[in-house]
Figure 1 (spheres, rainbow, N blue to C red):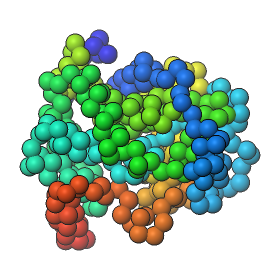
Figure 2: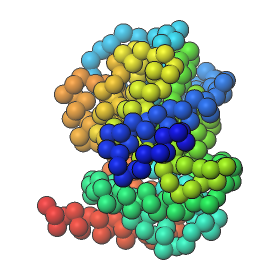
Figure 3: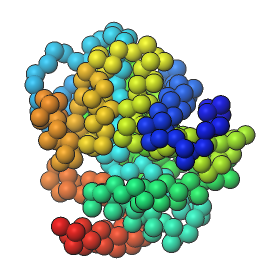
Length: 327
């Protein structure tokens, strides 16, 4: 992607930056895709109490033919990560792991926790707020080796993420793998973190935000912009073109209305644990819907635990108070 660096970021339009982010993510995903993913066996699925085609609560939406179609090599599946495949935000759990290893101070963790609480509870994506969150994350990894962060990421997955995978969504991904299709994560999380999660789940690979590195060291800059909203759709479009996929035969899964551009690209969109806006959109457009949350868990989903740090409690309270004042 170095050849695209001649255009100063401030002069690119948002659309151009989304395209650049998507293409960079697709290129990184193909380079790191797993040749032979470890798949969940039928015995393991039975032991976990999973029905690969009917996992979770009954799906809403219109009846459709058996899906995925076995042997259809022009089809693939694209899964959002946060609150679709995994409970909570991957980048927050990664941040917890880095804090534990003294990559940054308590004050920075508190600010990061506040940013997460604001996004989840206030439901607002203020550009300045998102820019601040992005800059915070980039400043943490600047100057560190990519290999170092990858090694730490493996440990962090075991510590904080492995037990947060939604079994129902994992089973849906497995159904695509069993049908002989490739399965990709698509997330705003760093592509290195997303790749680790994809490999651990036996998936094909991952599309994620690409941070610039020179000679294996992070520069503190992004290639394009975070893989969020329209940029996710561009990444899926670019990967589908490179892989020779027919998007009408592909499936996409997400919990967030921000991913409607990605979901709208494919012939089989699914709303998983959807937020209010996505649930409404899915019902209006006859998209299929699955919800693996129940009771109190559904209310709390997306608000990560602070692991002994009181930042989330304070940040959440402040976010709720501010949100109420703005009504």
